[in-house]
Length: 139
Image 1: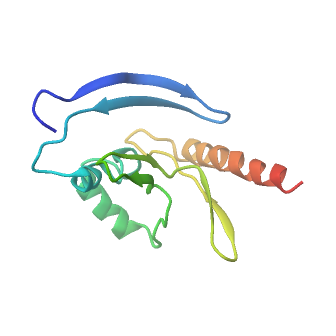
Image 2 (image 1 turned 60 degrees about the vertical axis):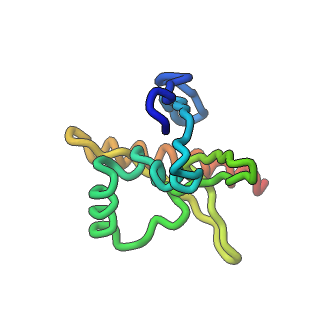
């Protein structure tokens, strides 16, 4: 973004959902003329909240440690518009499907003082919201 144009419209606004709460910050700025929306997208995805920081090294570590690709999980869902605008969300706590199977993916943020059992419980709690939705939809 051009220097001086970045501003925070909403800072750590608490959003409550059925099974989790999130702090959401909305940041905007005027894109520098030397870049386009694709450059901006590349700079912010995958989001640090699901990859870790520093982002590039964290993604390298994920690639080394995780035996399978995350697939669409923690990726982006959104659009690029012909007028130069784009809007994306992180694909977390989502239900995914292919021609034969449906599946859910969920995770928890691991930090220095994480308690492994608590992180497992958090992950199961998040996944259960989607599993419950699938059960209700199939009735």
